[in-house]
Amino acid sequence: MINQYDILETIRMIQDECLDIRTITMGISLLDCIDPDIDKACKKVYDKITLKAKDLVKTGEQIEKELGIPIINKRISVTPIAMISAACGCSPVPFAKAMDEAAKAVGVNLIGGYTALVQKGFSDGDLELINSIPEALATTERVCSSVNIGSTKAGINLDACKVMGRIVRECAEKTVDNDCFGAAKLVVFCNSVEDNPFMAGAYHGVGEPDCMINVGVSGPGVVRAALKKYPDADITKISDVIKTISYKITRIGQLVGQRASERLGVPFGIVDLSLAPTPAVGDSVAHILEEMGLERCGTHGTTACLALLNDAVKKGGVMACSRIGGLSGAFIPVSEDAGMIDAAEAGTLCLDKLEAMTAVCSVGLDMICVPGDTTAETIAAIIADEAAIGMVNTKTTAVRVIPAIGKKVGESLDWGGLFGKGPVMPLHTESSAKFINRGGQIPAPLHSLKN
Amino acid sequence: MRAVVTVIGKDAVGILAKVSTACAEYNANVIEVTQSVIEDIFAMIMLVDISQLSIDFADMADALTAKGENEWGLKVLVMHEDIFNCMHHI
Image (cartoon, rainbow over all chains, first blue to last red; front, side, top):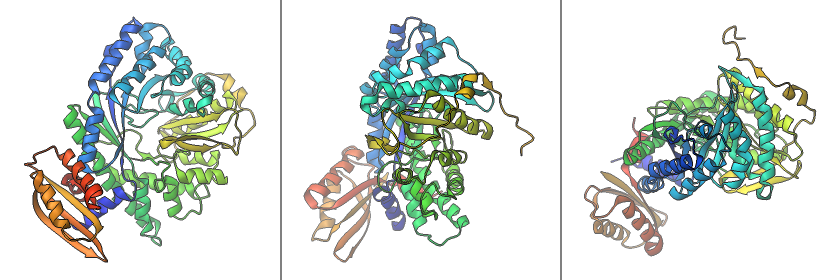
């Protein structure tokens, strides 16, 4: 029989320590939906999504019941819409509506891929899509958008940073009645990945097959509970404990992905080895760092602890599944992590420290509320800084900041659910406008002479 | 194919009988049982064969959990053995 202790350990992880599968995301290629007639194209998009994903939610729920592990989200990512809509030569908002309706029809809570890739420059279709993002996000419920503005190979498109600074603000302004939620559905990337299952940045890259299943695992609560048993261990031991627990968590991701793939008749892509927090008690990445010995997340030592955590999660997870991909690492979304919210409210965690943390962890400046009077140029400069970290370090970085229109430091935005609530965090007030308005392209970095 | 049924709750007469009767209703064959009572708390782990089930496995899992909660006052979890095997064996 399976060891009794092992059974109880697994059950405890799920029941008490918030272990879950964060998402099963079906990637669907829309390249065969291109049509110069936008109505026809939108119908093809709707038909293809609803055909491919018709059993996604049902299958997810069935696996959830059989294995006894919660699968929190079932989602869909599609080919960057800018590539599909370019043939139509008009505003691509109808595509967002078709995606939204398809998502509702199949019962997924978010659908990603209202996306443009402009790291080296804009096509007309890219610009039309980017300019339509505020309207698309304000008039749909479940659509998520992302724009890639830089890469290690191409450098950083500073013109795109400038445009996105304005677009982020407009997204918040258009949804001010809904706590500026539009901006929470928009991510600006450097080195975006094609098989990311996590929202809001998921899209289905052109190098991917027609349809595939990717899985995102989670489990900050489990890691913290494991570390609690070693209050006096040295840091090498801590790394080993994280590796072991990460292996166990990831194995479940592999199992769920395989089952979903078999039942849906769709190839299994990757497991994204991520520690994704939720605002729930006991599901916080910040609390893992504090368990390692920091009085509060954000103080000196935070970057080192996060670097160790991020690396150990990958080392443990790599052997547990056949293919790794997506963003793979620890996420640090401020509003979605109870420990980060506390640290930000206490003033220990500031934007500059978060930026340093993004150099060693999975993604970037995520779910951060900034004052309502922040200028588009300042947001653009935040995007450029973050993209520079990604470009130079050959990693994915992203910015998802939410300008809290009409609010200032000390107030907060509250969306509830998985998105949580975010205190408005202070920014530097000195202008970056001249730099941003120069425009042009930051050239790709040199990859030798490394010092 | 096998599944693990875990039952936790306040000790009472006939828990094992109730759970195994319910399993039999769905044609789940009990293979092995470990149980203990520590300070009034009953805990049981039961390994059952589910290859000849009369209903869908997910429905059986739901039904046993619901019975545990509504009729027996016990926490009943039914999970496929694969989740334990994958997590604890390389």
